[in-house]
Image (cartoon, rainbow, N blue to C red; front, top):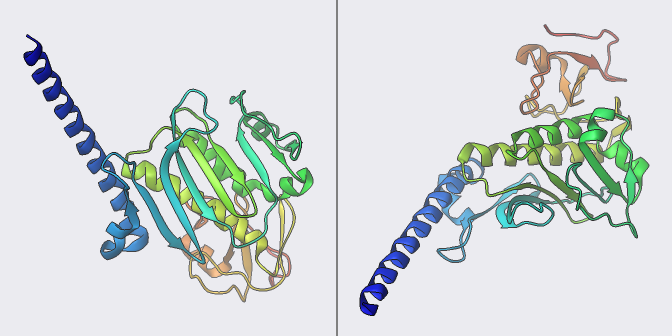
Length: 281
């Protein structure tokens, strides 16, 4: 009787291991599909790493002048979930250190000895998210309407409607509960994370002065997201995410080039050459 139980147990373990390995292989293929978009087909395999057959895949790729990583990780702040998917990108510029999360995460621990509570001007955003920063006034300017919009999109894309973001002098980290396994959901998460990075980098760009959440003044050169050239003529700004565009590019495209923004209304930035306010649609 005992040998039979041992054989049955061994068969069960073998089946379980096979299922786990198959699951990990399928998961890695999803990550490789994303890697092809950022690294190309030749480098996609080297960009995705799995330390062991049971490890969760990790994708690391170069973006602009820095490096980004997405991987599954043990949960750090989501009490009802053992795992989380974490996007991390190294910051080659200075930011205001802060932590932000969805408001329903009641056990989220505030660093009361270092960080102070941030009170957002937008009551809807303030009721959905809570934040703490080393300098709340600077943090309010940093988390402008464009970044708020991206955070809300990440929250809506999460099945649990939860998201956590951390900004330090070294990196930007964004996490959602659970392991993202679908190629499209992984890609969407990465794109929205990169957009937040771009918006933060734009604030640091020399010649771009953010006066407040709803006012942007162009002093020198900024690249248009459509033609990728420096804007040297009339400049328009998306009224939703505040991304600058060439006037001609905006007219040609018919809407904002920011991922998933789709705003058709724009305003002219100060010192951009003309006074009219073009509005598409």
